[in-house]
Image (cartoon, rainbow over all chains, first blue to last red; front, side, top):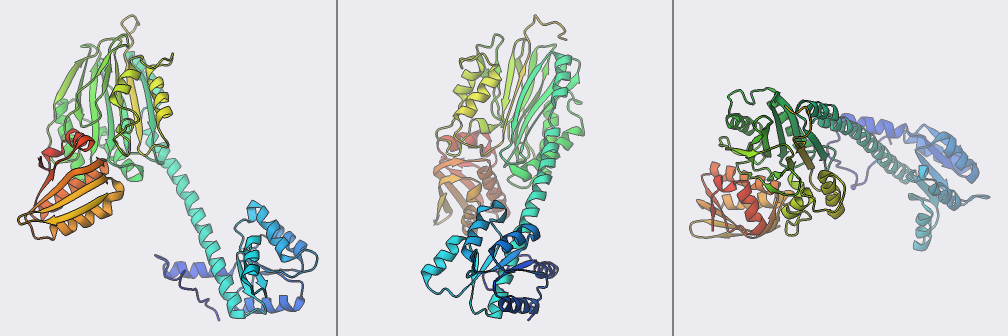
Length: 417
Length: 101
């Protein structure tokens, strides 16, 4: 009999192609099996049954100590273990094996004549994976060996797959962080404009749907944006990469009017995104010469403007339709004074929204308080707010959290354009 | 989320309660399907008892809007409350799907 009849529970696995089935079968048949029995006749019989079933990679042990040694040196994929052996019995072998985390999942098939429910319970409590009756029936032996080896192989494959996915996600994560300004870039912006930029980017999965950016436009203007695509995880992150490519193709203030540009971005995004996908955003620029911020809102959370002195501030308007929601949308530009000493705080909605939305952990009032020195601490308001939020958040994030603070030093600092 | 579908003379009404979030997707799809197959020319989604909605939920409403447009059914939302109302206003959904009181 070459083909093991797999019981119903395992038959009908989704998506196992014929090639995969053959490969899996070959891998199972090539598995190393350790047969432990003190009687030579039984070892020979089991050998006969297993080789007839296509299992040729067999090793043998005569007692418990030999078995433990063999497991250590040979790393078998499955052990067929007799319970009744002199010196160290099967129970002891089981218990000793299970104490070692390396052998926690090693399939152990116990041979036993035990009939009562109590006996069976005892065997499983000792750590056996399954039992095969004594005297050994060849079909039953091969069936049980087959199932457990199949499980083991599939678990291993799953494990390998997971590890490779995790490695890929690590790389993707690096790539995502790469589309946002690194410290060197922020230092450069500080050099050019005197602006101090602090940011926090925390995804709730390996990848996220948020992104933010700050970039030089010319000697007097610096652009900034924060974007939040619907959802989170891999799918949302793909959209951040798309958005990055979209804006890299240029044209931001070429017409002089950023609303025209944003309307164009909206159209482009709409054609790229599926129905129901969109991005909320805030984007604009600081004009260090005119001491103003000119920005456009696309349903992003209301930015908070801190006045010079850091004791007062206010939320800025954010209206406008989310990007990509409809083919056409029109946007308005807002202008607010941004004299030296001012700060602008941008954030994604993870800060103010919670699953039940009835009792948010963090609300507008608390943001305002934290940013205007209301939290008694010597820390920079941005750091104070972040620490405060983390302290109050009930558990791991269920959405990506992005926060950015752009601070102009007050007029006494040299080197401002 | 829980839902109820009521067929009236000239429209079908979908009543949503609880939360409309990512995990509500399957149920929402089924409910919309039965509504669009009801043969009525108008569909009202009653949100009075909906306690919260996230961006995935908004996406679902937009998707429903797209589907009903394709089958020439007029879709409207009714009676959003509290945080749901705030979110719908902020994302300007009323400019895409009419909201009736």
